[in-house]
Image (cartoon, rainbow, N blue to C red):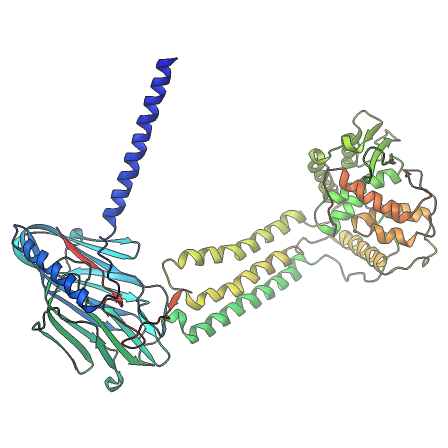
Amino acid sequence: MRKRRLRRTAFLAFFLCLVFLAALGTALAASSQAPASPPHRGLTPLSNNLRSAIAVGDTWRQDSSTEKSWEFERFDSDININDNGSFDVRETQVVNFTGSFTFITRDLSTQMAKDVTEGRTYGKVRIKDVEVYDLDGTPYDSDLWEVDSYQGGKKVRIEFQAQDEQRGWIISYRMCGAIIYAEDYDRLYWNAVSYYRDVPINSSRITVTLPPGTDMAEVEATDYYQPVMTDSYYASGRDGDVLWWEAEDIWPYRDFTIDVAVPKGVIDKPYPYRSSTFWLVFALAFAILLGTLAFMLVFWWFKGRDASADPVMGVSYEAPRELRPAVMGMLVNQQPRIDDISATVVDLAVRGKLRIIEEPEEVHPGVTEFSFERKDTSTRDLLPYEAKLMKAMFGKKTRVEESDLDLFGDAMQIMNGVRKEVKKRKLFHNEPEKTAGRYFRWGIAVTILPPVVMFILHFFLDLGWFWFLLVGLVPAGIIIAVIGRAMPKRTPEGSRLFWQAMGFREYLKTAEAGEPESMTPQNFQDNLPYAIVLGMAEKWAQLFADIYTTAPDWYSGTGPGFSTTRLASSLKEMGWGLYGTSGSSSSGSGGSFSSSSSGGFGGGSSGGGFGGGGSSAG
């Protein structure tokens, strides 16, 4: 026993070690995928920035004297703004390598801009169409570079072999969702060089080309770059419709942020967010909704409308007695229900097959309980589902208590028997539940699938106003499901009996006590099960409250005297108790900015724009 315990303990310790090593390996793998996090920048005074930069510069000078080091000879960025709200970036990177190097990485950021007080963006910030070229514009070998996504951007990794030499590449990509739209202007707020790097940039030239036809006199531009050394070269200007900036000696962990404001109308919103797109999508959603409604109504007219000349409107003083209550229930509701089986129990009692006995409330005060007594064991005049119900209730007994009954186990077989009887009577051209169920599934699919598909798509595409399509698609799915309920087509005989049942229900709704001469006790008993199926038992009982004052032979109550309304209420409670249940009834994304910061056009600071990212080599 002791050895067994020791073995279990050793195995548990070994298992925990494996779990720990697996977790550690996962964490290390995740950290290697994400770009290194630099020190927190924040909005510190310039003197603190200078001290930090000088400290980093001293470290770089120490590293440059070692055997292996690297630096950017050039880091140029050419930006071409498109009139659709995107812009193309072409970065030219020339690097001096001392020692042996095999790769360089460029982290392209999709983080939102900071310190912005006016305007908003449209859509998520996305990076698309990343390509790598040699300095002469020739596409770089696709086997030697790759792009990986991580939380907050994309990482471009370029592989090569370099030993004490200068190498260079061009990285091009398209930015979407990174233009800020303010009330009076549109704005490019961009960190033009990588920030997360521990090496200097000897020189950088940044250009911004605006869309053709831009009124350059209305364009405003600034930057948030301050050279660390006062004698470092820095200049800016414009040539035609091109804005440019030049700088030298950009120290490690230093930004070069540009800020360009252009007049409204030069840069349009992305297509999914334009007003013209809204009206197009609105019209399409409206067309889907009306088109679906029209199609389903026409389809119902030719395929689902009952095979009858005209519906027989008006009231009917009797239910369609040639149908048993449960069969009439399926004719009306297109499917059998538990309540219909309860009505069948009452119908069997009325026909003398059993007796319903209301028990005294001595055992459970306030709770009405029943027992059932079998009066006729013959099954010759019973339909198959009625015989199944009698067998489920009594078996070989002649009297059973309600508390001993649980018809749920036999309910499906009984309801299948009702279906077979409806099919045998040829009341429908097809199976109503399958027909209605098919349209219900189509309706659910049209209601649920588009939101699910669009939710998945919004991770890859900016949908904007296209979300509004759901305003047409979701109701269209509901229309399909609702009209699909009327698609089961009744035969001429089924249609005649259906309208007779509807006429009887209309009579129950509007009749007043003492109206017809046929209001006899027998009429009350014969039609009571049908009134239960139609959900009008209590209204039917009220009509006979002053006429029927003697309890029928098939029912035994406990209260003084007899009341049809109390009978109906008791039978309702009995229906609940048969099954152990408690009652049933019958019948775009994007972002907006607000901040207390100031500067530029609606707020701005060094490193606060879109872009930036980082660089590393090894």
